[in-house]
Image (tube, rainbow, N blue to C red; front, side):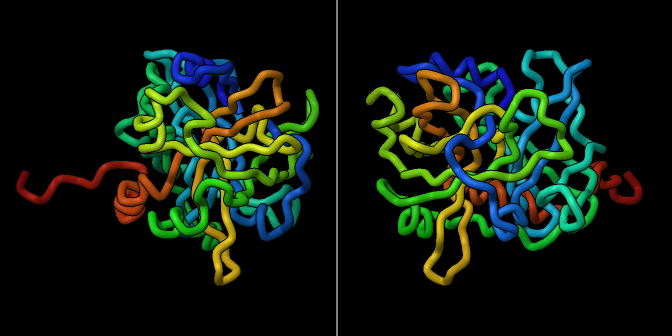
Length: 272
């Protein structure tokens, strides 16, 4: 997770820190890594790394803070960068980013606003991905106390080469928003965010933008969240993860994926 999310301290009653590799979890199965993406972006001389969730063949959902500058006026290069879906090796798939769409209500300078969501349009399809949960599915499958799985490509040790990066998972319990923010902020929080935690597993820096999924009755999985930030006392220990609610923003997601995927706006009609 990029360091801009440290500003979330103002929103949360406890320390908020960038989300990293899953701790206390396990290696992702081929099925789980098949919809989990990894990519890098450039901001000046720095390289930032994030995860994402492949949905609908040519689109990756990720955190908006992954593709926006840490400081107003900065520039992040995402278009033209490669996205990898799956673990390194013969099963990994690569495609270039040709368009970036950030939710219009995301505010770089006010993380309290939530809506930490972006869509990367890819130059070619990389698979069917995971289905975005509907509001009804979120209510039925991801209510308080439900079990969910966070997946991400964060590092597991300092200096770990990208070529060795593997997707890992953490099994979490969905929490009430009252467990994550002060009562006066609950209404605003739950419009676009949800939280989940475990005393044995969790997220840490590098997992930003990664998927939070739940099991559906038909044996498939539904995407219910995108990793946004972590509430923690000690880095990667006793972490409560905060995730963007994709079901709440589903109409915007579907509208963006319904547009023609080109890196440039369409030309004007003839005669204009």
